[in-house]
Length: 116
Ligand SMILES: CC(C)(COP(=O)(O)OP(=O)(O)OC[C@H]1O[C@@H](n2cnc3c(N)ncnc32)[C@H](O)[C@@H]1OP(=O)(O)O)[C@@H](O)C(=O)NCCC(=O)NCCS
Image (cartoon, rainbow, N blue to C red; front, side, top):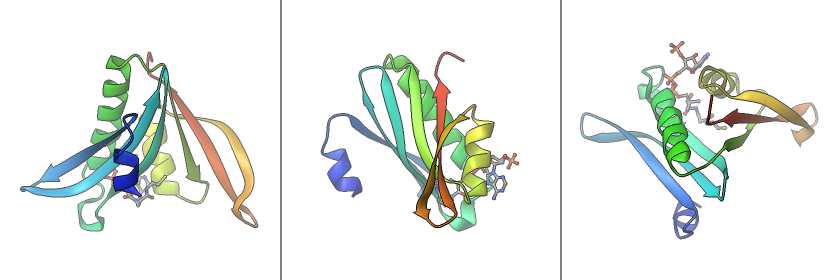
């Protein structure tokens, strides 16, 4: 999925490294003045060390410099760690897809204005 996404010119991937090893990555795509954060993950043993926030912050900076005004993402409403990370990085809830992941499992749509 990552290889396929990276074949497209609108997709970019950033990696977080520690001790010469990749401990996390984030994948996003941008088209004109909009971007979408597609995936982000930090390896379990490296979590809560700031890598996720660094990756999201780097995407915001990169998007801003590319003329992107708004970054969108979708997250499972039960994924409290990811929602906390996005909220801390300035994303706000913009909508919900009810039962998107199954009965009672909603998808949260979040958005971040890069000018803020
Ligand atoms: C979500 C994820 C990327 C966070 O990465 P991370 O490197 O642990 O995040 P950070 O250390 O940069 O955390 C930044 C802030 O996010 C919030 N946060 C992160 N993990 C959290 C958790 N488990 N519980 C509550 N808040 C959390 C906190 O506010 C944290 O700041 P703090 O540590 O000073 O309190 C990581 O948990 C992960 O890879 N999860 C599995 C994959 C996934 O769910 N990806 C998102 C799909 S949409």
